[in-house]
Length: 347
Image (tube, rainbow, N blue to C red; front, top):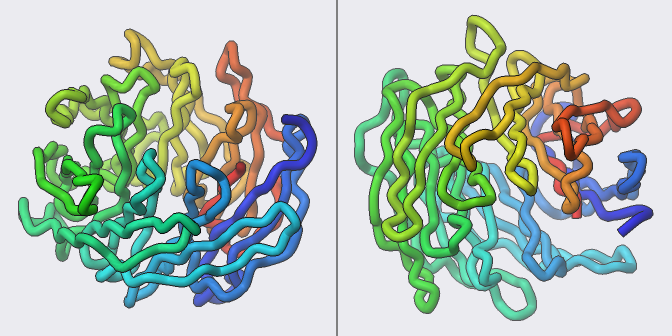
């Protein structure tokens, strides 16, 4: 589709200079230009956002000590409605995702190192939590005070759900009972101690995934077995950002699986990789300045032609054109001002 499309912006509402709710905007699919459309208030600290597959409901974490997840009914006429909030049973939820079947919401409590499951009703509203699992083993990694679940996603085949825990240097694989909404542990994949795994992204082929390690400034290619759900990490690779910790935040893979991009918060850059051997290998190509400070989150437009980078410390969103053939990134005009921009979700 051409013309303006919806863009939702996550922020912190309880910090100085933060927003007052979920930012509402549109973007032009051709130019990448963002236009502000106001704010949806009544949602506290909506630092991470995800949409239901049917596009009618938006979900936000409430990243607070008493963590929650909030459902928002979306309207094409701009009359968005908050449907309610449910407790995640933990502290500081930092990530959520919708199971592909559209019936379950998965969330990760960073502060308490647990993952939660909520049922999604026909209206898009959330029911009471059906499960909560705390990562009690292995013990925390070097310098960590406990588990810190940072992401909870579904594998491309839909057979397993995976939780990335920075505190225990582990990716946990579970089976989700799609009738009861309960989790059964399947396996654990451990990174090297102190890696601080933060974010896992699958290759479209479904047999490999890439792990952004926040604390040791690396990326790891992992083999994935859809039959067993077992993830097998390979050797750590460079982010190309030199010495010091650059706090890698997130990695994206293009829809055809040809290129990958890593956001480096400390370095304020995007690392571009060529994806080779059907997803089994990443080859570092170059580093692109993000034109902002502390890129917390990156996302593609649905067609993959635009990349949005949310720059938390500069309170901006940078937009890049993505060349499908070469994978090169080209800045699409001046960054858009958005208070404490920690997530941008284009639909």
